Length: 101
Image (tube, rainbow, N blue to C red):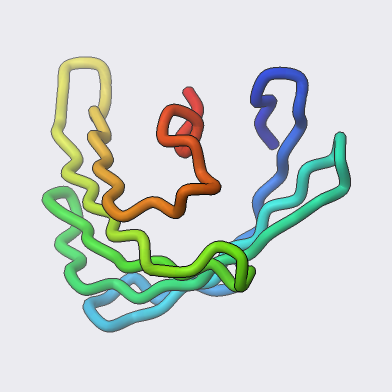
């Protein structure tokens, strides 16, 4: 569960197969508004501790297109830095809130 501003959001992973060409499906529910959404995707590249690339699609028809996500973890003295680049975000997703800190 995560708080984004005054909104409480919980995520549920329905399945994940972390291999190249493997798939995943994730759902989120906003407890404040009771709205939710789900998306699924496929890994194009999965190299543990080096690079993960996947293509995500929302199940909501008002959020068309595919989001390309690249994660390149990097070991640092206090753990792991996790730079994430998202490309082709749907207009309905504000870029600064797609991965809240």
